[in-house]
Image (cartoon, rainbow, N blue to C red; front, side, top):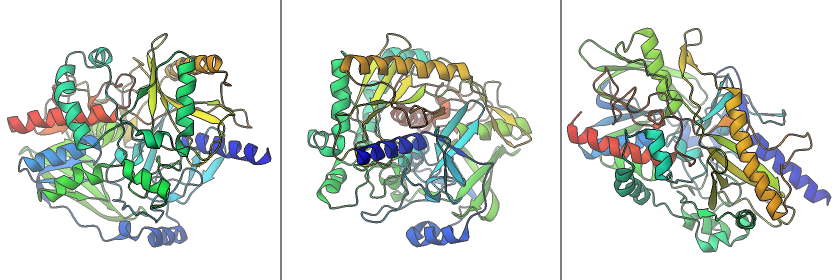
Amino acid sequence: MRRRAFLKAAGTAALLGAVGAVHGTGPAAADPVWSELFRSWVPEIFAPLPDPPEHSPAIVVGSGFGAAVAALRLAEAGVANTVLERGSRWPNDPWREIFTGDDLPDGRGFWHRRSFTGVTKVPMQCAPFGGVLDVTEFSGIDVWRAAAVGGGSVVFTGAMVAPEQRWFDEIFGGTVAFGEMDRVYYPRVRQQLRLGPLPPDLYAASPFSHSRRWDEQARAAGYQPQANDSIFNWDILRGELAGATRPSATAARSNLGNSNGAKFDLNQNYLKYAQESGKSAVYPGHRVDAIAQDPGGRYVVTVTKLDPTGAVLATRTLTCDRLFLGAGSIGTTELLVRAQATGALPHLNEHIGDGWGTNGDVVLARVDNSLSGTGQGVPSASRIFDASGMPLTLENWFIPGVPVETGALASLGMVFDPTRARIGFDAGRNAAALAWPRQAQEQVVEACRLVDRRIAERSGAVFDYVTPLGYDANAVFTAHPLGGAVLGRATDNYGRVHGHPGLYVVDGAAIPGSTGTVNPSLTITALAERNLEAIVRAGK
């Protein structure tokens, strides 16, 4: 009984830590002792960084889903392009711990922060370092975003799901036809990323007992779980179970990376194929600080070169004929609002910064004392949909960092929330500014709780898995920020930024705040495929 209570408490701490906020006031000085440890563990990221060319036909800012599509499709069209990424390019290894875990995270987990604090209010200290996850704190919301080559594909949970047409049409309002996405671009991405549902043999394995029990409870409550497509390499998960590789995706690791390459992330497909073409080169450790356009029409990109400790190695100004922004909703929008406020891009329209939303993200957990054995396989097996109140999806989730069953069933909720905010520019901090209404977050949390409570009551479970300190498993955060440079408003219907020919938005900033109760990654990637096809075909 004591052991089970300890495991439950440990599981709660890990879950609440993983959905908390990283607090700090900006990049902190690196600890030399920890830096040497990181160098010994992952020497690859300390290798000398090459310098990008002074001028490129195209520069791609960022290396996440939309940016990776841009790099590959431009390369295939014969357009040489330079990909700039602030984070490191992390290797994979079947036995080394390349990435840190959620249980006791170190600096490899976070982008230049000193501590990680969940809603338990208990800080988890870590040495400041150029880790893979950046948490940006705004008024009313914390935003999780990647800082690594491969962007969000390195740190997400792998689910890639298309929305229903009714929600897609309501979000995009005719700027994008669902039919073409459904016929052409969603299937193209599914094939490229080898997406598929959790196979029956893995679903039946011990680490997914929580997935099976989650489905049982959902069915008892009258729901029919739907299988989620995922980006994981199922053979690597089988290898984990067979002892052929260090456990990762079957042992509650994902939010801070999978060391053995269990996720088929962008380094293994789009970015790899782009580089193999000889027309695209990726430059880690290059943070884009500002963008502008010179009188001759070329784009000017100010870049700081960083080593993993945060030390500044150089500051340079690069130029390009065409500039593709794929730094994520916050990164892309911050560059645009800064350029608008400073006059560096004087013809940006009044819609820059508009249409930002959280995709209605909520994390919940409920108690199930029948669970036993090893658990917390990462890939989400299934989801349910509910439209009895605010339309929402609950996905079967995992307890990060604890590879045993903890007596909790976690869910990731995504609510169809119409709330939108505007990202502005704070000149004093030289940074994006955002205020997210507390009421909006309370509404989406309550909507998810109502459904979770219904499942608990009808299945005989106990609602609200709480910590010994009395906090439930939820935090005010989003891992799915969307909007800020929305299609059909800040850009045309294909991501061409109004007022500045040759400037494009290719990431989640183009999507107005929601992808209709599902994870955004598939829609971001498919939309980039659609838009790049049109841009390449037109030559502009």
